[in-house]
Image (cartoon, rainbow, N blue to C red; front, top):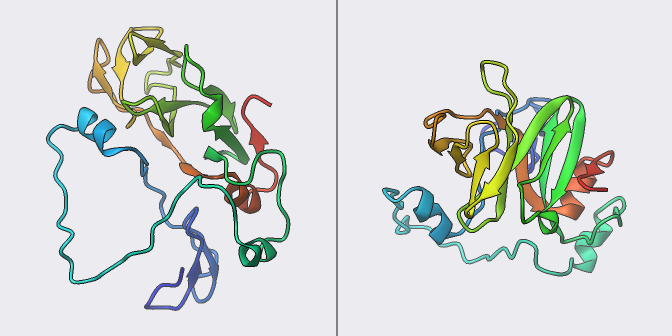
Length: 205
């Protein structure tokens, strides 16, 4: 992508300026959850929707996780990392100097995915449909590090039994209202994550 003011080329994955006047600049990464409408409304019943009547048309449909890459696109990649299928969906997490891919299919029925990435204790929280969403820091501001499990279809922390939503907020229990810190993370396809972060490790490998 290019911006219309400086002509700088930007990485769509992590907001880094690759070439041009602003090369080397890093945009602030905000949490952007990919989810279904049903799961979003379950967590945010008072949500609003922007009008689609913008005066612009956009018909291109992106089937993220769909099989296959075109030959022309494959030829643009320096190489393919074959540790996972090219279109497999992962939550890519960056912390410290480490990149880790959390494959969605490795979701456990008993607890959300949890690990240490670059020295940071992270948990991959899930939406109301149980789909892994984004990574959050498991440490609270008082220094306690939470462990997470599933209970009655919800994600709760073991220490207090508080229930957490996909946005990293405790919505019920002793910690209700507490917000976990977002850890830079994205839902993406494996080939793209591995191309940008060739030294990535894979959760569960």
